[in-house]
Image (cartoon, rainbow, N blue to C red; front, top):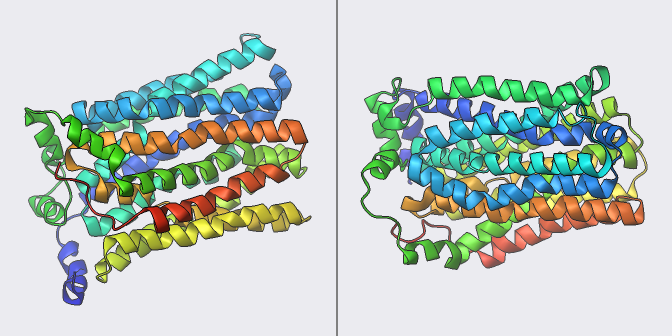
Length: 447
């Protein structure tokens, strides 16, 4: 893109409409609830340990149950999206994950304890992960359909940054509910909230060609800018399925493997923050549950800011004529470098310094979270959902490994020292993936 077109772009955009941003707001709100539901156990974890007679290893296994199912469900979830479309699959997913969130709140009321309680929670968290698995591939597919390339980084950053907003809004609220009411009430009310939101989803969301509020001008603007606005129409009329050779591209492309590995590293950092971080503040730093709830929100605010900044910078570079490959890699590498600062918490005594370091690391993780934008740029056209499933499935193997490793390390050493080193190492590995493994990011194949 030359500088002249870059200057003219804002004037052209002003008159075409902004219905696509209403769609983005809707998936942002749903993703906030998605991550809040995942984080319920990390906020209530200390009370669950005490009331149900669990130990850190059991809790680590329960944390990992979600990730096992979430990772296993990614490819089937992506296939379902390509087969049935985002509206139907995402809506049903939202209903089911809300029900399994609600059911976790019944474990204490059923009088279960010890191993039986651990098995029940493991099973429910497993099912929660399974039915949540289409969520992020659906977000990616929706952004690919609704946003031109020059806006896709910011759009992807916004829905991805919903995870931080979930912590900002719901960590203090869930901590208050745990302290004032009971940990069971947290799960019950979060489940009810999701069920209400599912009604809103089916009422408001439509694909581009059938969206009541979308103008012809905005549809043309989206299409001309690279949005896959015809993807759902093509899905409904397609007579052929992806061939084996086309599917093989998902596993033989060097660039896709770089993006997969980068997502694995981002997810490892994410799962530390949404599982063990509040417990680290309580057990490792001596905070109360109320203090941990509020403190956990501070890094999340910076993570949200970093996420928005990363997407904005990436899109801004593209509008200035920088190739999308370099524009996506720049915030990722800088952000992952910053994320390694969390290991320095091992070497400071004051809680204020710990919070500052964790905040910097979380900001870096947010800045680096451009993977979904990269995927929207490089995924084979006919397999956007399936590619998103593979991407998120491989990434979420870290969601299995990270809680288990941290739980084992904490149980065997009695401290979080080595656990923080383990988490920080993923920042270095992510930089390796984008700088040395990846080549020039471009759409894979001709599918």
